[in-house]
Image (spheres, one colour):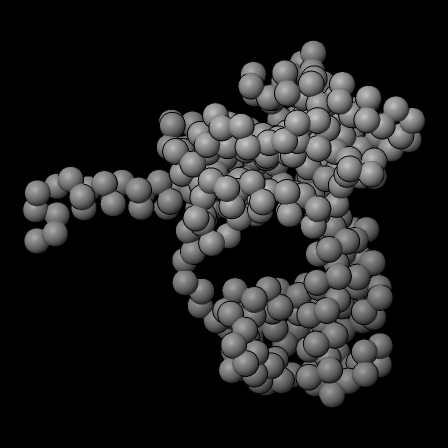
Length: 295
């Protein structure tokens, strides 16, 4: 049933290849823990006690509550699939309580540090530097996900309308506006791309130095390198720039529902995490400025 389940995630749910692989890994780990050879499992024979024992074993080996919850989510999805296909009539995950997670505020780059990205000449000359600069600008000025940036094609960029068409989670499309500072850079990059790779066949917007479509690890390395030049944040990833986009918008008065649409969130709850970050900023300012705040 594993192969059918993973196909269901990819085709019916529209999950990315990376997500499907993660679900497959989680499921194999659990079935191995239960003593099954993957592919020969008997889901109806698995009890909630075995799942609880697995959760306990994971925690005891240092797996974080967040990762444990992700693995539990895999099992819940698995049993949901088994139930709707009629392969199993029980769901032992319903009797398992997920471990509590400490609230983690999204990391973001401070305004002063983002200014260093845009006001200092840290990008090299030529195609390589223009590509890297546009990657950083695109992530910060649009808030799109890493996978969405990698999947951008020439056809999805409309400079006349100042928009890009993004293919998000679940293959859902959304239109994201192009910031005025971004449009000239895109034009400059497209010219450099055409000169550097005159006969390239791919329509991917972002290309490696060899003319191939960029991939997630490639973009991660680019972002990590340039953020390392301007910030001391422990984590320096494309997702941090997405958090920075949302946090800076909210701190400057943007409507939360508008941010939700720009980010491509399915519900407002996913966007509200940024209000906690902004509120923490207010609390810190209050603690520093109010004469009796520390009493």
